[in-house]
Length: 289
Image (cartoon, rainbow, N blue to C red):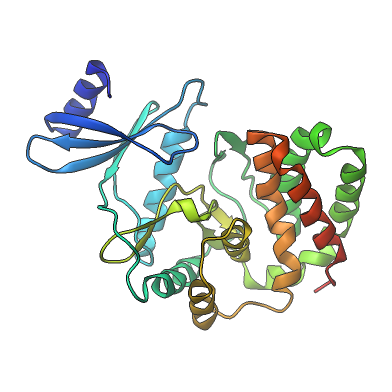
């Protein structure tokens, strides 16, 4: 249940009378609630966990608003964002209807068409509760090395071990050659954390939630979607029909998945170490695109 002070604050900021609030399951980091108002409308409320870094929820709201502005994908509209809570449009959940996954694949490809002059974002943001640097770069391999792989690798070295760290150093040395072809696509607006739990279906269509956006190579979102499963072939087929992938996409996939696996090692511990090592082996064994 929400405490009385927070209920009062939410009601005052949104101009509503809160009548009830029920905590929702499924969130890995931030507690979330279904807030019922006296006019029978509902709000999705996410609260910052204890010890959350400043700006975590505000940065999520910026990503949601940028995605909304494309008109390509369905995301919940931001109502209010503060340091301690984020209020969003309530999207009534439903099962995915026929064609919903394919539509989501097409929608994502269309969102990825929205570009920028450089890779990065106007400010740092977060992946889960970890900081995510976004300093602008004209070169995609440089961005992926300096803003993605290296910060997480520094945190994970002790857990993954010396042998894997040495193999990561080899991959880092090869990154320009392995990602050169990807740069031909240019920067795309990314969701940034596209696992199955961040897809929310309504009766109308699939929506994307909990983004960690920046401008990067579009295959990053697809690599994350493939990492932990849950996305059917119809999603990937529809994406590729809307915007075919560049040559070498399969070879780049484990390179992109390594970022998210390192994040999981750093957030959740050693249970992801073996999977990280396997992805590293796959990345190094893949042919140069």
